[in-house]
Length: 329
Image (cartoon, rainbow, N blue to C red; front, side, top):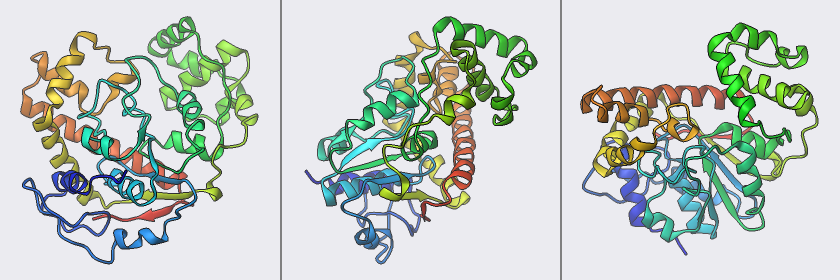
């Protein structure tokens, strides 16, 4: 079934109010903002995007990549597959900008909102994606590690037992230097030792398996979707354009129920849990606990979103040089 054009236009208008868009922008308007027509831009270039190969769309938060995915789903009858590590969680629809109920009704979607408040790894995602590749897909999201695992392969590292994870958490917080010193030399040479989470991951693998992470990575199997077999696109927006969209989008999120989502999560809140890392969630929880005003929480969430987008842009530049760039805005 074709994706609903009207809902797609509304979603774009909410986050691009008043802007002239060179990238993906449908040609209708809604009350929350005007999105002018842009003939000859990305929409006219859809013909150049393969109808046969899997389409991969990466990009920073709020850059408009989901709108393009819906257009391709409508054109080709593709399944829209999530590649965002936070949009898998059922507790966040508004706050992670998951597709709306209407959008999900208009086109087949997969791997959105199907996980409870439990850990979910890139390996879990890759195993689920494997079962979807027998049909036309457009895989869209902002989690670069998912795309690298898909196109480069993923080392089959054993699961980390809870007791090892707890030991690692305590060591990282109590004696990070000892954690770094405990890595095997091969892994240490390939790890950003200033990144506590990367160091902890390497330490956990060695502690749990007796084998260094680098050795596991050397045995990485062939990728499910080699880059040369896919149509790989990455959004590269300008910073001012994206910053404005991020601010507008969070305001719309509050109007559409982001605070209510945070309130529902409050009894289960665990700041270090993977599901609790949704951008804006800690700030809204702080407001609900009386630690911030709503205006302060909104400002802090917008800042956090912009910082996250900067990290995404940096990662995409360093790892996705071979992907076709799309410049919206």
